[in-house]
Amino acid sequence: MIDLSAEERARRSLGRLMFIARWIMVPVYLGLLGALALVAVKFVQRLVEVVPTLLQQESTETIISALSLVDLSLVGNLIVIIIFAGWQNFVGRFQSTSPGEQPDPFSSLGFGAIKLRLMASIVVIAAILMLETFVHFDETQKGTAIWQLVMLLGFAATGVLLAAMDRIGGDH
Image 1 (cartoon, rainbow, N blue to C red):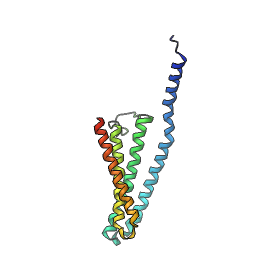
Image 2: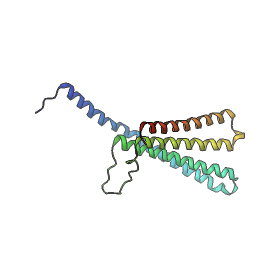
Image 3: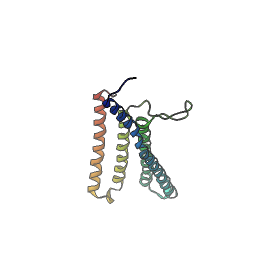
Image 4: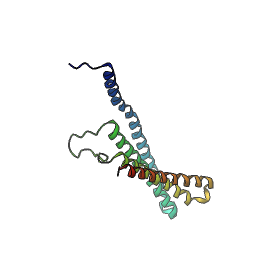
């Protein structure tokens, strides 16, 4: 029998503890599932509000209504990406009893690709909000519009920089 030193036993125990600690993230992912349900409820609520007034709306209001539904959809997709990628990368692989039973959408994607998808979703959400601001520009405070534009440009620049860093780092 191999006699392990106290330092080696401590290192192995700490390694096991760190590996088990990833399960601390489970409540976070369950909370994100709750947030996804809330977004779905808001989507249905917005759809129910829009449908009865659709024929009386002007075209710009119809576009804004459609974009608000797209916005909620993008937020939902963003939550799903975070849940799947985080669970897949940090907690554990999805276990399937038979091939094709469960989707494995992120098994072939690296962290860099997921990061860029998240950033792209955030930029599109910000762009939709900016478009809504400009449609209602007369009702919007100019300072609010400027800050929204600055944030949109900041998100876009961050996305470009993240893509450039991945390219420079060799993660294509």
